[in-house]
Every structure is written in C-alpha cells, then in structure tokens.
Length: 264
Image 1 (tube, rainbow, N blue to C red):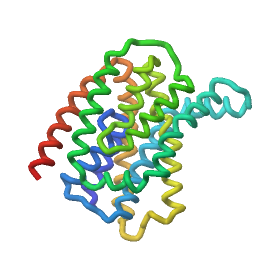
Image 2 (image 1 turned 90 degrees about the vertical axis):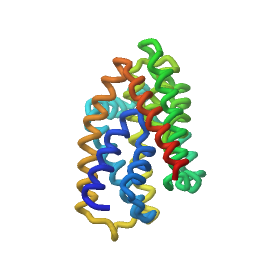
Image 3 (image 1 turned 45 degrees about the vertical axis):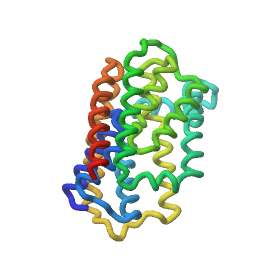
Image 4 (image 1 turned 120 degrees about the horizontal axis):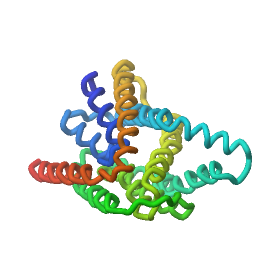
C-alpha cells in the first residue's frame, strides 16, 4: 500500500465510520477498486490504525461529555453519568460475544465479498428510511434499549451494515431522542475499539515489520481529520432528519456492488 492508497482508505474510514454508509463495506469496496490486497497481518494493522484514529476523533468531538461522565462516576453515586456508563457496558455485551465466539467466521466475510456488501448496504438503507420517519421525542436511552442497540451493533459487524446507521436507527425507532441516540451510538463503540486493539496487540496478531510507518501515519491523520468532520456533521444531520439522503446513497452503491459482483 502506497501513500495515495493510505490517504484514500483513511478518508473512507474517517467519513464512513460516522456517516451511516458502512465503513467496513466501503473499506472492502475501496480495496477492490484500488486493487489493494495486503497480507492478513498487514491488513489487520491498517484496520487497527484507522479505527484508532476514528476512536480518537470521537473522544475529541465528545470531550466535554466524556469529562462530565468521568467526573460524575468519580462521585461514586448512582447518578445519570454512572448509569450512562453502565448502559454503554450493557450495549457492548452482544458485540463482545460475537467477537469472542465468531471471530474467524466474521474475518472470512472480509475477503472482497462484494455481493454481501451490496446486499447489506441495501438493508442499511431500509433502516435509515424508517428512522428518518420517526417522530421527535425527549426520551433517553434505557437499559433495555441499550441491549437492543447493542444487538444492532453486533449485527453491524457484517461488512455493508453501517454501525452508526444501525445503532442510531434502532435507538430512534425505539422512541429515543435523535440527538441522544447519536451521542450514545458514537460513544458506545469507543470501548469496543480500544478493547479490540488491545486484544490484537496482546495476541501478537499484528505485524509491524512490513508496513511503512510514514504510510500508516498519513492514513491515521487522514482518518482522524475526516472523522472529526464526519462526526460533527452526522450529529447535525440526525437532528434535522436527513438520513434519507444516505439511504438513497446506500441503495445506489449497493446495487452497483451487486451488479459488479455478478459481472466479475
């Protein structure tokens, strides 16, 4: 992978991690278009670096919220901040179970399966259309909601299902406030990303020998900057019920991916 490929994949990751169009699906499509097919360990390192960049951009955008949650938890009271943290923990359970017991099966799906990506993008589009029609409320995410949203996050581990799209749509369809739904969706994934990175590093699965540090650094910066922009923009779009535009995009890209898969 050269510098141009790194920049392109970084921008794709940064934008699609937050915009409801599936980062994993677009990364797979990007690799297919660029003809990039690195070895598994190299591919894992690239994935880890790019996801780390978007996790940091999430923390930067929600830095005030994160600090307030930390301060609230340090009071050691069953207050709103501690409850929010426990809801994040509940939401992580389905993804952790899938990651621990079905990791090999999931990894097998990330091998240029363009047909699967296309079909899952159309499912993402359907979710976004439904969520865009939901009524505005002031309801907060409950513990039961957190578990259901967590199931959506686990399903979104499939390439082509947008994690942000699935979790925000599920939360909104459960009757939650759209802004609160977006906030919960973006913050709930951060512990999972850091946990996955720690697991991959400790297991020795990541190879740093064959990757150019400069190329990875440039990809990291591209993902971080585009992630800052996309995260901020997405919050505004959810408030204004503009998800249908992304639904149309997902349908178009999904159909193109399906057609290309059959032509190949």
